[in-house]
Image (cartoon, rainbow, N blue to C red; front, side):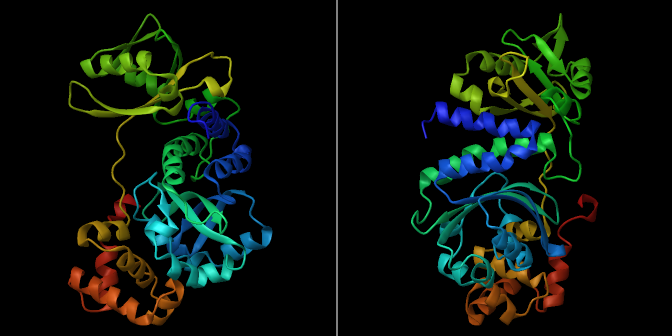
Length: 367
Protein backbone atom coordinates (compact mmCIF):
# COMPACT_ATOMS: atom_id res chain seq x y z
CA UNK A 1 0.00 0.00 0.00
CA UNK A 2 1.36 3.44 -0.94
CA UNK A 3 1.40 5.34 2.34
CA UNK A 4 -0.19 8.52 0.99
CA UNK A 5 -2.64 7.78 -1.81
CA UNK A 6 -3.92 4.30 -0.96
CA UNK A 7 -4.04 4.91 2.79
CA UNK A 8 -5.87 8.20 2.27
CA UNK A 9 -8.39 6.53 -0.04
CA UNK A 10 -8.99 3.73 2.46
CA UNK A 11 -9.61 6.22 5.28
CA UNK A 12 -12.13 7.97 3.07
CA UNK A 13 -13.88 4.68 2.35
CA UNK A 14 -14.10 3.98 6.09
CA UNK A 15 -15.83 7.32 6.66
CA UNK A 16 -18.19 6.60 3.76
CA UNK A 17 -19.50 3.78 5.97
CA UNK A 18 -20.59 6.37 8.53
CA UNK A 19 -23.13 7.52 5.95
CA UNK A 20 -24.05 4.13 4.53
CA UNK A 21 -23.43 1.12 6.80
CA UNK A 22 -24.22 -1.29 3.96
CA UNK A 23 -20.76 -0.47 2.57
CA UNK A 24 -18.96 -2.15 5.47
CA UNK A 25 -18.69 -5.58 3.84
CA UNK A 26 -17.03 -4.07 0.78
CA UNK A 27 -14.75 -1.82 2.84
CA UNK A 28 -13.76 -4.72 5.11
CA UNK A 29 -12.69 -6.44 1.91
CA UNK A 30 -10.45 -3.52 1.01
CA UNK A 31 -8.97 -3.55 4.52
CA UNK A 32 -8.42 -7.31 4.27
CA UNK A 33 -6.56 -6.88 0.99
CA UNK A 34 -4.40 -4.08 2.42
CA UNK A 35 -3.41 -6.20 5.44
CA UNK A 36 -2.94 -9.36 3.39
CA UNK A 37 -5.70 -11.38 5.04
CA UNK A 38 -8.44 -13.66 3.78
CA UNK A 39 -11.59 -12.83 5.76
CA UNK A 40 -12.78 -9.96 7.97
CA UNK A 41 -15.49 -9.33 10.51
CA UNK A 42 -17.08 -6.78 12.81
CA UNK A 43 -18.69 -8.42 15.85
CA UNK A 44 -20.24 -7.51 19.21
CA UNK A 45 -19.63 -10.20 21.86
CA UNK A 46 -21.71 -10.57 25.03
CA UNK A 47 -19.73 -13.08 27.16
CA UNK A 48 -22.15 -13.19 30.08
CA UNK A 49 -25.05 -13.89 27.72
CA UNK A 50 -22.86 -16.31 25.74
CA UNK A 51 -23.91 -14.66 22.49
CA UNK A 52 -22.47 -12.48 19.77
CA UNK A 53 -23.97 -10.23 17.10
CA UNK A 54 -22.42 -9.96 13.66
CA UNK A 55 -22.46 -6.41 12.32
CA UNK A 56 -20.51 -6.95 9.08
CA UNK A 57 -18.52 -9.69 7.35
CA UNK A 58 -16.24 -10.12 4.37
CA UNK A 59 -15.63 -13.47 2.64
CA UNK A 60 -17.06 -15.63 5.43
CA UNK A 61 -18.71 -18.85 4.15
CA UNK A 62 -22.26 -19.26 5.47
CA UNK A 63 -21.46 -22.52 7.24
CA UNK A 64 -18.51 -20.90 9.04
CA UNK A 65 -20.74 -18.05 10.19
CA UNK A 66 -23.15 -20.59 11.67
CA UNK A 67 -20.33 -22.45 13.42
CA UNK A 68 -18.81 -19.27 14.85
CA UNK A 69 -22.20 -18.16 16.15
CA UNK A 70 -22.92 -21.54 17.72
CA UNK A 71 -19.51 -21.66 19.44
CA UNK A 72 -19.16 -17.99 20.40
CA UNK A 73 -19.51 -18.85 24.09
CA UNK A 74 -16.26 -20.85 24.06
CA UNK A 75 -14.10 -18.32 22.19
CA UNK A 76 -10.93 -18.13 24.36
CA UNK A 77 -10.01 -14.74 22.93
CA UNK A 78 -13.03 -12.85 24.30
CA UNK A 79 -11.53 -12.28 27.79
CA UNK A 80 -8.59 -10.50 26.16
CA UNK A 81 -11.00 -8.29 24.21
CA UNK A 82 -12.61 -7.30 27.49
CA UNK A 83 -9.26 -6.22 28.94
CA UNK A 84 -7.18 -4.84 26.05
CA UNK A 85 -7.00 -1.09 25.31
CA UNK A 86 -9.43 0.14 22.68
CA UNK A 87 -7.99 0.44 19.17
CA UNK A 88 -4.94 -1.64 20.12
CA UNK A 89 -4.59 -4.74 17.89
CA UNK A 90 -4.43 -8.22 19.39
CA UNK A 91 -2.67 -10.82 17.26
CA UNK A 92 -3.11 -14.56 17.78
CA UNK A 93 0.51 -15.43 17.06
CA UNK A 94 1.79 -12.70 19.40
CA UNK A 95 -0.73 -12.36 22.22
CA UNK A 96 -1.80 -16.01 22.54
CA UNK A 97 -0.06 -19.36 22.63
CA UNK A 98 -0.83 -20.05 18.97
CA UNK A 99 -0.40 -23.82 19.31
CA UNK A 100 -2.85 -23.90 22.21
CA UNK A 101 -5.25 -21.56 20.37
CA UNK A 102 -5.28 -23.85 17.34
CA UNK A 103 -5.93 -26.78 19.70
CA UNK A 104 -8.79 -25.03 21.48
CA UNK A 105 -12.31 -26.37 21.08
CA UNK A 106 -13.39 -23.09 19.50
CA UNK A 107 -10.74 -23.19 16.74
CA UNK A 108 -11.08 -26.91 16.02
CA UNK A 109 -14.88 -26.60 15.90
CA UNK A 110 -14.90 -23.63 13.54
CA UNK A 111 -11.68 -22.93 11.66
CA UNK A 112 -9.56 -26.11 11.54
CA UNK A 113 -9.02 -27.59 8.08
CA UNK A 114 -9.86 -24.37 6.25
CA UNK A 115 -6.29 -23.20 5.66
CA UNK A 116 -6.61 -20.35 8.16
CA UNK A 117 -3.86 -19.34 10.58
CA UNK A 118 -3.43 -15.92 12.22
CA UNK A 119 -6.08 -13.50 13.45
CA UNK A 120 -5.81 -9.76 14.15
CA UNK A 121 -8.64 -8.53 16.38
CA UNK A 122 -9.09 -4.92 17.54
CA UNK A 123 -11.53 -3.84 20.29
CA UNK A 124 -13.27 -0.59 19.31
CA UNK A 125 -16.21 -0.33 21.73
CA UNK A 126 -16.80 -1.78 25.17
CA UNK A 127 -19.33 -1.84 27.99
CA UNK A 128 -18.97 -3.57 31.34
CA UNK A 129 -20.39 -6.78 29.84
CA UNK A 130 -19.69 -6.60 26.09
CA UNK A 131 -16.98 -5.82 23.58
CA UNK A 132 -17.18 -4.83 19.90
CA UNK A 133 -14.27 -5.73 17.65
CA UNK A 134 -13.18 -5.77 14.05
CA UNK A 135 -10.75 -8.38 12.81
CA UNK A 136 -8.94 -9.92 9.85
CA UNK A 137 -8.14 -13.63 9.56
CA UNK A 138 -5.11 -14.67 7.53
CA UNK A 139 -4.36 -17.97 5.82
CA UNK A 140 -1.57 -20.49 6.22
CA UNK A 141 0.14 -19.24 3.08
CA UNK A 142 0.43 -15.78 4.64
CA UNK A 143 1.63 -17.19 7.96
CA UNK A 144 2.03 -14.92 11.00
CA UNK A 145 1.11 -11.28 10.54
CA UNK A 146 4.11 -8.96 10.41
CA UNK A 147 4.85 -5.65 12.11
CA UNK A 148 3.58 -3.65 9.11
CA UNK A 149 0.27 -5.54 9.07
CA UNK A 150 -0.32 -4.89 12.77
CA UNK A 151 0.73 -1.25 12.47
CA UNK A 152 -1.72 -0.74 9.60
CA UNK A 153 -4.50 -2.23 11.75
CA UNK A 154 -3.47 0.15 14.54
CA UNK A 155 -3.60 3.18 12.22
CA UNK A 156 -6.98 2.25 10.77
CA UNK A 157 -8.69 1.45 14.07
CA UNK A 158 -9.36 5.00 15.37
CA UNK A 159 -11.06 5.82 12.07
CA UNK A 160 -13.11 2.63 12.12
CA UNK A 161 -14.16 3.47 15.68
CA UNK A 162 -15.17 7.02 14.75
CA UNK A 163 -17.13 5.81 11.75
CA UNK A 164 -19.14 3.26 13.73
CA UNK A 165 -19.60 5.79 16.55
CA UNK A 166 -21.19 8.22 14.09
CA UNK A 167 -23.40 5.62 12.42
CA UNK A 168 -24.33 3.76 15.60
CA UNK A 169 -23.69 0.47 13.78
CA UNK A 170 -22.54 -1.39 16.88
CA UNK A 171 -24.57 0.37 19.55
CA UNK A 172 -28.08 0.07 20.87
CA UNK A 173 -29.16 3.16 18.95
CA UNK A 174 -28.53 3.60 15.26
CA UNK A 175 -28.38 6.95 13.52
CA UNK A 176 -30.24 6.73 10.24
CA UNK A 177 -28.63 9.52 8.25
CA UNK A 178 -28.74 10.29 4.57
CA UNK A 179 -26.02 12.91 4.87
CA UNK A 180 -23.05 13.58 7.09
CA UNK A 181 -24.76 16.68 8.43
CA UNK A 182 -27.80 14.70 9.57
CA UNK A 183 -25.60 12.13 11.29
CA UNK A 184 -23.63 14.80 13.11
CA UNK A 185 -26.79 16.62 14.16
CA UNK A 186 -27.83 13.48 16.03
CA UNK A 187 -24.59 13.29 18.02
CA UNK A 188 -24.57 14.21 21.70
CA UNK A 189 -20.99 15.46 21.26
CA UNK A 190 -20.23 18.88 19.81
CA UNK A 191 -19.51 18.59 16.08
CA UNK A 192 -18.45 21.33 13.67
CA UNK A 193 -17.42 21.48 10.05
CA UNK A 194 -15.18 24.40 9.18
CA UNK A 195 -13.66 25.67 5.96
CA UNK A 196 -9.97 26.38 5.35
CA UNK A 197 -10.30 29.94 6.70
CA UNK A 198 -12.14 28.89 9.85
CA UNK A 199 -15.61 29.64 8.49
CA UNK A 200 -18.20 27.54 10.31
CA UNK A 201 -20.02 25.52 7.64
CA UNK A 202 -21.96 23.37 10.06
CA UNK A 203 -22.57 23.38 13.81
CA UNK A 204 -24.80 20.93 15.66
CA UNK A 205 -26.82 21.83 18.75
CA UNK A 206 -24.18 20.57 21.18
CA UNK A 207 -21.52 22.64 19.41
CA UNK A 208 -23.71 25.75 19.56
CA UNK A 209 -23.94 25.34 23.33
CA UNK A 210 -20.17 24.83 23.59
CA UNK A 211 -19.43 27.96 21.55
CA UNK A 212 -21.93 29.98 23.59
CA UNK A 213 -19.90 29.26 26.73
CA UNK A 214 -16.73 30.43 24.90
CA UNK A 215 -14.44 28.35 27.10
CA UNK A 216 -12.08 27.10 24.39
CA UNK A 217 -13.64 28.39 21.16
CA UNK A 218 -16.25 30.99 20.28
CA UNK A 219 -18.05 32.09 17.15
CA UNK A 220 -17.50 35.52 15.61
CA UNK A 221 -18.80 36.54 12.19
CA UNK A 222 -19.49 32.86 11.42
CA UNK A 223 -15.87 31.91 12.09
CA UNK A 224 -14.39 29.64 14.75
CA UNK A 225 -12.21 31.73 17.07
CA UNK A 226 -9.95 30.21 19.76
CA UNK A 227 -10.05 31.90 23.17
CA UNK A 228 -7.15 30.06 24.86
CA UNK A 229 -3.50 29.58 23.96
CA UNK A 230 -4.09 25.85 23.48
CA UNK A 231 -7.01 26.62 21.20
CA UNK A 232 -4.83 28.93 19.12
CA UNK A 233 -2.15 26.26 18.78
CA UNK A 234 -4.83 23.79 17.74
CA UNK A 235 -6.16 26.10 15.01
CA UNK A 236 -2.61 26.70 13.81
CA UNK A 237 -2.10 22.93 13.55
CA UNK A 238 -5.12 22.70 11.25
CA UNK A 239 -3.61 25.21 8.87
CA UNK A 240 -0.10 23.74 8.90
CA UNK A 241 -0.87 20.00 8.90
CA UNK A 242 0.42 18.09 5.85
CA UNK A 243 -2.09 16.38 3.59
CA UNK A 244 -1.40 12.93 5.02
CA UNK A 245 -2.07 14.11 8.57
CA UNK A 246 -5.25 15.86 7.44
CA UNK A 247 -6.56 12.63 5.94
CA UNK A 248 -5.45 10.49 8.87
CA UNK A 249 -6.90 12.83 11.49
CA UNK A 250 -5.45 13.96 14.78
CA UNK A 251 -6.45 14.06 18.44
CA UNK A 252 -5.62 16.59 21.13
CA UNK A 253 -6.63 17.39 24.70
CA UNK A 254 -7.36 21.07 25.32
CA UNK A 255 -7.84 22.64 28.76
CA UNK A 256 -10.07 25.69 29.25
CA UNK A 257 -9.72 28.47 31.82
CA UNK A 258 -11.80 26.52 34.37
CA UNK A 259 -9.50 23.50 34.17
CA UNK A 260 -11.96 21.38 32.22
CA UNK A 261 -10.38 19.13 29.59
CA UNK A 262 -11.86 18.63 26.13
CA UNK A 263 -10.85 15.81 23.81
CA UNK A 264 -10.71 17.28 20.30
CA UNK A 265 -10.64 15.10 17.19
CA UNK A 266 -10.37 16.45 13.68
CA UNK A 267 -10.10 14.97 10.21
CA UNK A 268 -10.32 16.36 6.67
CA UNK A 269 -13.45 15.36 4.77
CA UNK A 270 -12.33 15.57 1.15
CA UNK A 271 -13.22 11.92 0.68
CA UNK A 272 -16.83 12.34 1.79
CA UNK A 273 -17.72 14.12 -1.44
CA UNK A 274 -20.59 16.26 -0.15
CA UNK A 275 -21.32 19.80 -1.25
CA UNK A 276 -19.38 21.27 1.66
CA UNK A 277 -16.13 21.45 -0.33
CA UNK A 278 -12.83 20.65 1.39
CA UNK A 279 -13.74 21.04 5.05
CA UNK A 280 -12.47 19.77 8.37
CA UNK A 281 -14.68 17.88 10.81
CA UNK A 282 -14.05 18.74 14.48
CA UNK A 283 -15.52 16.76 17.37
CA UNK A 284 -15.38 18.19 20.90
CA UNK A 285 -16.19 16.05 23.91
CA UNK A 286 -15.08 15.48 27.45
CA UNK A 287 -12.61 12.57 27.69
CA UNK A 288 -14.37 9.27 28.19
CA UNK A 289 -14.18 7.88 31.68
CA UNK A 290 -12.01 4.79 31.68
CA UNK A 291 -14.55 1.99 31.48
CA UNK A 292 -13.41 -1.14 33.25
CA UNK A 293 -15.02 -4.53 33.08
CA UNK A 294 -14.65 -6.69 36.18
CA UNK A 295 -12.07 -8.73 34.29
CA UNK A 296 -10.06 -5.72 33.08
CA UNK A 297 -10.11 -4.28 36.61
CA UNK A 298 -8.75 -7.57 37.94
CA UNK A 299 -5.99 -7.67 35.32
CA UNK A 300 -4.87 -4.17 36.31
CA UNK A 301 -5.26 -4.56 40.06
CA UNK A 302 -3.69 -8.01 40.42
CA UNK A 303 -1.21 -7.87 37.51
CA UNK A 304 -2.56 -11.01 35.85
CA UNK A 305 -0.73 -12.65 32.96
CA UNK A 306 -2.41 -13.54 29.65
CA UNK A 307 -2.80 -17.17 30.73
CA UNK A 308 -4.23 -16.18 34.11
CA UNK A 309 -6.63 -13.77 32.40
CA UNK A 310 -7.91 -16.46 30.05
CA UNK A 311 -8.44 -18.93 32.89
CA UNK A 312 -10.16 -16.34 35.07
CA UNK A 313 -12.46 -15.47 32.17
CA UNK A 314 -13.62 -19.09 32.04
CA UNK A 315 -13.94 -19.35 35.84
CA UNK A 316 -16.28 -16.36 35.81
CA UNK A 317 -18.54 -18.46 33.59
CA UNK A 318 -18.53 -21.24 36.19
CA UNK A 319 -16.51 -23.68 34.11
CA UNK A 320 -14.51 -26.54 35.64
CA UNK A 321 -10.78 -27.11 35.23
CA UNK A 322 -11.42 -29.81 32.63
CA UNK A 323 -13.83 -27.64 30.64
CA UNK A 324 -11.44 -24.70 30.76
CA UNK A 325 -8.54 -26.88 29.59
CA UNK A 326 -10.57 -28.11 26.63
CA UNK A 327 -11.71 -24.62 25.68
CA UNK A 328 -8.22 -23.12 25.91
CA UNK A 329 -6.47 -26.08 24.30
CA UNK A 330 -4.06 -26.62 27.18
CA UNK A 331 -3.44 -29.30 29.81
CA UNK A 332 -5.57 -29.42 32.95
CA UNK A 333 -2.41 -28.99 35.01
CA UNK A 334 -1.67 -25.74 33.16
CA UNK A 335 -5.13 -24.42 34.00
CA UNK A 336 -4.65 -25.37 37.65
CA UNK A 337 -1.29 -23.59 37.76
CA UNK A 338 -2.83 -20.40 36.38
CA UNK A 339 -5.84 -20.64 38.70
CA UNK A 340 -3.63 -21.19 41.75
CA UNK A 341 -1.73 -18.04 40.78
CA UNK A 342 -5.01 -16.11 40.52
CA UNK A 343 -6.08 -17.36 43.97
CA UNK A 344 -2.73 -16.28 45.38
CA UNK A 345 -2.79 -12.83 43.81
CA UNK A 346 -6.39 -12.15 44.80
CA UNK A 347 -5.96 -13.68 48.26
CA UNK A 348 -8.98 -15.95 47.81
CA UNK A 349 -9.35 -19.68 48.43
CA UNK A 350 -12.60 -20.78 46.82
CA UNK A 351 -14.11 -20.27 43.37
CA UNK A 352 -17.26 -18.63 44.76
CA UNK A 353 -15.16 -16.21 46.78
CA UNK A 354 -12.99 -15.44 43.75
CA UNK A 355 -15.97 -14.79 41.46
CA UNK A 356 -17.62 -12.55 44.06
CA UNK A 357 -14.46 -10.50 44.52
CA UNK A 358 -13.89 -10.02 40.79
CA UNK A 359 -17.51 -9.16 39.95
CA UNK A 360 -17.53 -6.52 42.68
CA UNK A 361 -14.62 -4.68 41.07
CA UNK A 362 -16.93 -2.84 38.64
CA UNK A 363 -19.61 -0.54 39.99
CA UNK A 364 -23.17 -1.47 38.95
CA UNK A 365 -23.75 2.23 38.33
CA UNK A 366 -21.50 1.94 35.27
CA UNK A 367 -23.40 -0.86 33.56
